[in-house]
Image 1 (cartoon, rainbow, N blue to C red):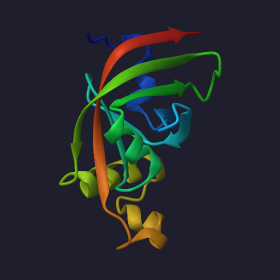
Image 2 (tube, rainbow, N blue to C red):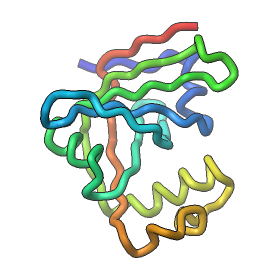
Image 3 (cartoon, one colour):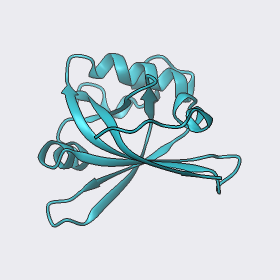
Length: 136
């Protein structure tokens, strides 16, 4: 089952809005994390470092929810429940650099976040919307 993000809410995923990624912990508690994302018109792409809790959660339980709240109007939001379709290590660094440029203006993520250079492996998750709820 798949769903699509309405055209009138796509801007929340196409411009640099910090979204909330919700994954499921081993004890079934939700874990929510503010993250950067990209959107290709069909899929939401999330980047993280290998070994982090959200990485483990999506690997073990391949479902997630992404909540985007409009920074100019907090009552306008889009909740996207997703299936994890793909985990890609090869494109992790390229993707985080692209996100860094979009969100901070710095095309080298590790200039923005120098403390993690050489200490992590970046991975990108391809999420497919299965249910979309929007308001505002």
